[in-house]
Image (tube, rainbow, N blue to C red; front, top):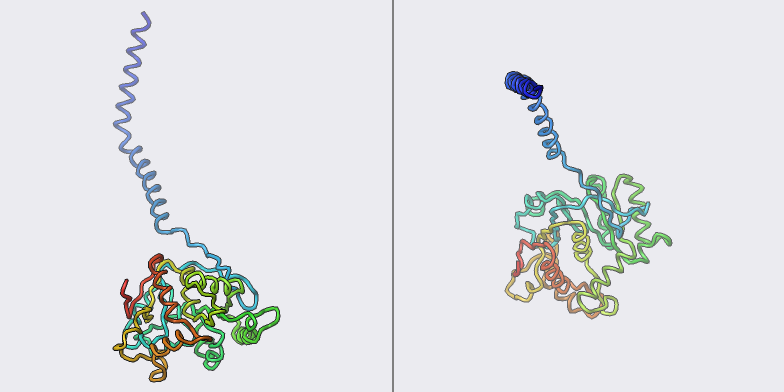
Length: 305
């Protein structure tokens, strides 16, 4: 029958094809396979070497001078919040502070001459409306040289108003005219109200009725919690620190030696019936925040962490 020859020729063809595959594949198939695998490997390596750049986040509570645009920048993974306290003297924290991705400082606290203890970098400087004249006294240091620093200024609406050109806002406009490349921002009225509401929620007291003023430290911590994934606070004492009367006297500011004692200042403000910063109360709030957020206090370390 015709079936047997067909089967025979089919087997011969398959055998010949297998022989040619074994003979030729090492010369052609393997190089082709190697090239294909190499290309896939390189594509994978490129994907690992070139991660997608983090996109800027928008922080609506902070707007630029004079444009009024919200602050936009990439969040920081690790931040150093540097207190202006005399606790920083002798801490030798400078290298540790400068190693953080972002460094937040307050008001007119200088770095020059104190680098070993407080570091030299400044990513963000949070400034009270009352400290603007102090910065203006040393414009070359704060505004001309510090081109990498972003300035965030807070103050009451009557002084910071853009529509009615409040007194402090007018001063900021002049600063911006003198230093056009300066990155200068103010808190919005909504953010100021939010900070007041946060104080009331945390303490049960209306800030205005209780005669309290929020400190620059309060506004700095609020900003840091928005901006930073992990916060390392340097030189801030705990709420219980000043209750120990055996504590050695420490300057209120590390750059103003021998003028005001920190604990005396804190206790006087805490007891003031009106017009006082509630430094100790704020630190009690910060302690609660640290239990919920990634916040570490060091130099000195706090009892709970």
